[in-house]
Image 1 (tube, helix red, strand yellow):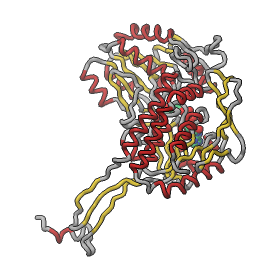
Image 2: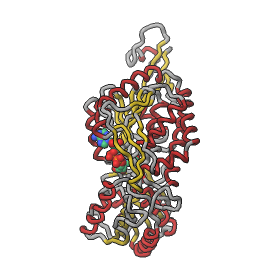
Image 3: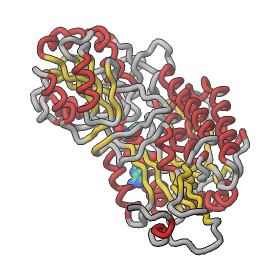
Image 4: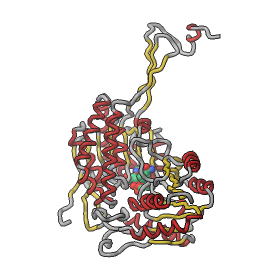
Amino acid sequence: MAKKATVYKNFINGQWVACKSGKTFVNVNPADTRDIIGHFQDSGPEDVNAAVKAAKEAYKKWRLVPAPKRGELVMELGLWLKKNKERIARDATREMGKILKETRGDVQEGIDCSLYWAGEGRRQFGETTPSELPNKWAMSVRQPIGVCGLITPWNFPMAIPTWKMMPALVCGNTVVIKPASLTPLSVWNLVKGAEEVGFPSGVINYVTGGGRGVGTPLCDHPDVSLISFTGSTEVGRQINLACAKDFKRVGLEMGGKNAVIVMDDADLDLALEGVLWGAFGTTGQRCTATSRCLVHRKVYDKFLAMLAKRAKALKVGPGLDESTEMGPAVDEGQLNTDLEYVQIAKKEGAKLVCGGKRLTGPKHKNGFFVEPTIFADVTPKMRLFKEEVFGPVLAVVPFRTFEEAVAMQNDCLYGLSGAIYTRDVNNAFTAMRDIHTGLCYINAPTIGAENHLPFGGVKQTGNGHREGGKEALDLFSEWKAIYVDFSGHLQKAQIDTDKIVKVK
Ligand code: NAD
């Protein structure tokens, strides 16, 4: 802690450079705000312009590098992450608070993602199809789009940047990445790795700063062809509007208010582990966090008591301590939001079962720690039922029938993840069909997505694109249909076809 904090720079056109204004912002450890992680560039539009210019220039060559070769570099970056996993996970815990076990998982997701996309360098399949005319060839191929602006949140500081960067690069695009101001070090690590494994200058550019200072100019820049954003629905809406005026392609991954259904026939011990992990893992700061727990009346009192007992016993503390089970809120703003929702829920008549307070003991007093909190008897009219808290505040809601539970699941502005615990195969399959979300789990918590499957949500969680899996190709590449006529004379589609064979 006594060490002088490092000043980290932007990475533009293969060079580490200070922003034009010379301003910086400070990054601190949310578990102990006396721990200064570093100073980062508080960039502005002029720095965005320089980064986009470099990315545009690099695109001319990068798009022509064979995709398998682009994939090889992505693989090298994945292997670099693997080699540096522990150090990078520690940096991530230090800058955003979640426990080490989880940041190791976050970096692992970056590794998995890189290796998956390395393979996609040898796929990116198009189709060949018969032409309606003789001596003519027809096929479809994927093409890169150009410069991609990547805007990322703080809660998965390594996984989410890689979900965007790796497919973008393998498809032949160049990128400018703007990390969340609360987690610039994790993305700095990723970009440092890219430099070390030898990505050509300008292919990956990194610009730190605020949403208004860097995010907005990136969205408005005429030479940026695509924006891929993960963050709140409120900011996603602004980005969508900004991109609409130039018909810029935009992929949006936004908020969630995910529910788990616990049926009366569920294995309650299994459901308990899943709900605890879903609600309090990452201090509830996951887009897929379990924030509503819908419990069948017949097991309501019993399950609530089981849940409260375990939530009260969770060990809250600094994430770097291996024995900690839940880390701090990411910053003072998030801590205040958590506490504000405690007051809102109380006022609306929900029953506080446990938690609800800031922790101020010796190991907590310099950080943003809040107790794992459970409210019971929450109803669909309450704000705690409807609004994303993004903290460790769980709403428990009773129901009487399976149909009522599914209706409550879907009574939500968002549609990211849904889960059900049941031993009834009919209910499980009905839930798979009727829960209106992009992700659905049976006898597992609302969290736990894997890299090779499509990730994203419906309603106000997303705009129809998916990250993860081969489906991400559709965001980061453009289809081109190609026709090759080797007949040597003009053939007119739809017109000359009648001459070929008379069909009765
Ligand atoms: P945020 O919306 O505040 O910020 C996300 C990013 O957008 C940051 O880099 C921020 O600096 C930037 N930004 C802010 N204003 C901007 C603007 N006007 N123009 C361009 N960029 C701007 O979100 P956050 O607090 O970092 O993350 C939490 C939110 O992210 C939650 O709502 C959570 O549900 C959501 N999230 C969604 C997913 C998903 O895949 N659906 C995953 C993780 C997080």
